[in-house]
Image (cartoon, rainbow, N blue to C red; front, side):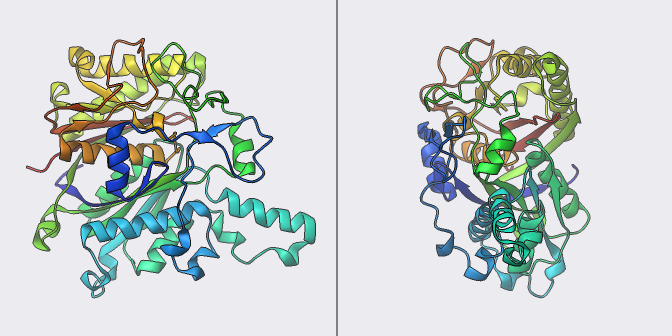
Length: 411
């Protein structure tokens, strides 16, 4: 990245809270909200524990005409985009004279599985005349980007990163590039809704998926009892802007997108964990170089925390390799152990937590994790106050992507 791209708005729809304030209150308190999967049709499936967004009423936030043509993951995105724009105090009047100056980029790992399953059931049970016209778009990876753009009248650069988990961080790089090329602002982020029966069945092939039936034990990365990750739904959207444009309109700058880098090391398997760790270390070095940041300047790390012994060991090794001796001292946290790992939205929620941590000078804890068995300073139990200026957010995908994002407080 070159120049200054800044975050001015945050919108969150997460298992532990809707809105940035509620999300942060629960995150800094280390509140764990993992619970038994309650979605209809999932009772007989091996996945027992997940992070569900409870209490989310899409009809209270999104118009009916958009709800009927979109999946739950897009409902999350539309609501989060509204919250981000409200937080940034950017209304339609601010860009209606130049709608091509604001765009949208989202990341998606699976698209609208719940909507797609329902329509396919209609097809097989009742015939093609009973399949709705929106089946062709609601399941698609790009549905959230398109619907946000249409609903908000945003005609600038629009795109989708169709990828695994690390795509959530890559979306920020796409947004920053659009701003460097002349856009005023971009809505960027990711949401997921992978808890429909069809979607869960697709996930059962992932070796790292935890099928433990105890919410307090199902997701414990960096411990000897690590048994995989717990999936989640929800996500976050951000408004990012050119810094000078943001200051000109009187916006509050919440954080600077300082650096990003990505690598690819092939599908995650126990036998390839070491190679994946090397790829993550390379991404960390690249993001720090992009940010002009020395390893010892990193004040907090938001870990990927896949939750298998091999992957956790590889992530710890990557941090120690990329950060040197500082890697043993820097606070490391993984708030997602209390909410679940929401695929592409997982690092996006971590980014929201990182911005809020920088603002408040608080490193949130890693819920349900005790007795860390790796040579890292993992924050457990309660939050830790600290002077924070730079945060490093990490993400690895099950299919082999690695990404690192550096955030800094505005100066």
